[in-house]
Amino acid sequence: MELRLGTSYRQILNLALPISLAMLVPQINFITNNIFLGRLGQQELASAGITGVYYLIFAVIGSGLNNGLQALIARRAGQNLPKEIGKLFFHGVWIALGFAGLGILATYTIAPTVLRATINNPEIAEQVIEFLLIRIWGLPFLYLYVMRNALLVGTNQTRFLVWGTLAEAVTNIVLDYGLIYGHLGMPKLGFNGAAYASIIAEGTGLLVIYIVIHIKGIHKSFAFFEDVKWNGAISKQILVTSSPLILQYGISIMSWEYFYILIEHHGERALAISNTMRNIFGLFGIFSWAFASATNTLVSNIIGQGRQEEVMPLIGRVVRVSLSISLILFTLLSIWPEWFLSFYGQSPEFIADAIPVMRVVSFALLMMSFGTIWLNAVTGTGNTKINLIIELITIVIYSLYVYIVLEYLNLPITWGWVSEWVYWLSMFSMAYFYMRSGKWKNKEV
Image (cartoon, rainbow, N blue to C red; front, side, top):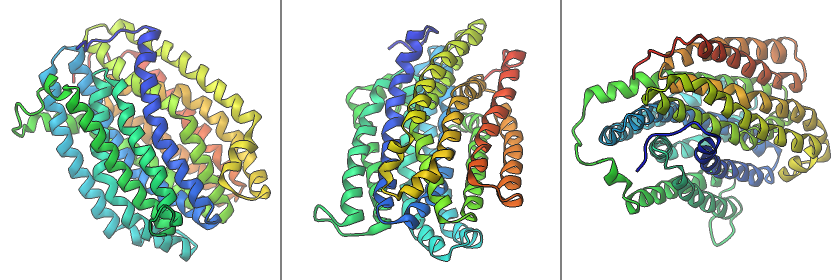
């Protein structure tokens, strides 16, 4: 198994495109949930926005752990140390399960009080809380699922990602249809049916991908079960690398939840429109996130090979590909916004109000296409504390902007969504200047 990577366009695409496909399927799941729930009514679509962002807070904590572990695995791959990869994965799994337990505990003890205090509409608040007390039990499955991402992406095995995500997608769509509406002989659970469907789908995807790993013998290549003793030094290394990313992503999404709470103050329709924008952002942003994930792995692997001088040209190649794809998607969204919005089954007035917001979001996708590449290049260097500093500064600027625009000035939500421009430009500028400074070249992980 070849663990050392190159920097060609072909290598970039071979790594990133399977990641894109793997990311596409969960986004289809999420959008399917919202399309089904949107047909129950505008309130359900609005509530789904808050529940989605809340669960995303914990999902991105898993992503932070995943990206930190992925950088470490890619570095060991560049150093051609397969047994060290197995040790990292083993410890990462147990750390992930610990975080999942904390997430469940926080949802049952803290979240209901916070949500009741911040959501103006009591009906939406209770609907959101009831849903989340069910949905949060999918967290252990999700965290184990992202651990396999770290392994397969960090070791250039991305072609296997699709099997688990495909199984998850099919399961989720079938169960959404059955459990929300009471079709296919299943009980009619309404809004909460989407929570049960998602949990079962995540469990199914997890089971399938670990079966694939076992059948392909990947577990043998990295000696997963050769040394199962707990190693404090390895655990500390994972946490030291991942903790700044976990904090970074957690703070980022909590600021987005804050944004959604301010949006809710503008009414049910504003919240429902913003939920559809998040769907569109998630679906059309997968290529940027996939190339960002590939950048993390490629930068770390190349540094592990001692080829630091190739890092900056590599980032330039990834940015060019990512931006080119985003330009195509931007064009599609600009020409046919009504077509994309029509899937949610809402009124013509809803679509008319949503189109100006969609214009803002589609332009933000262009900014994300290069901003997230440069930020993940910082992650690949292993200096994740810099990631956290960049995120903290960006979030302060972002939060001040959304408060002034949405709460103090009470401007339309279109101006609120301009915050995405503020976010990505702030993040890009700091990450770009850090990488150009060359201060990362002597970082050891």
